[in-house]
Amino acid sequence: MLLKNGLICWYFTDSWEQFRISGRVDVIDGSNPDTFKLQQREKSWFSSSVKSRLQYLGPNPSLPRISEHQSEEEVRLDPSIGPVAAFCLLVLDPDQRESIVDFVSVSKAMRWTHNGIPGMYMVDVE
Image 1 (cartoon, rainbow, N blue to C red):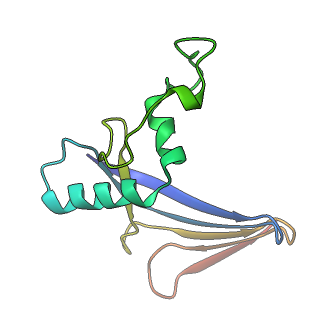
Image 2 (image 1 turned 90 degrees about the horizontal axis):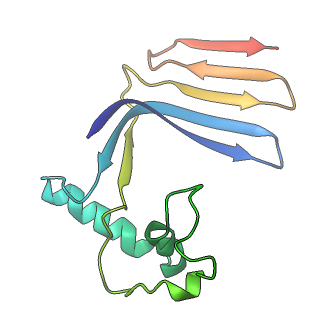
């Protein structure tokens, strides 16, 4: 599934800066027909820790656990098994014609934006 608008953001706590990139997002789940994309999804799954994989076996966020006494230790995950159905890989494509690179310095109250057109920059001072 291809989504038209996506955004990734890094926030640097020491300098109070944000760096953001927008673009199209490809959501790769287990039903994707592209073999290469499925391999990338599996590679991403196995590069994460077993503990981080456990979050895909729990209930949806804000829903209670099946049992009040259920803990992470009670949920079993075979580390050699590939991605579970709930795991999707998101791939951001910052296409030069449609993407925006955004840099914000909160401490300096300054924002720098590049819209993908060579030589076109915008700086806002708040």
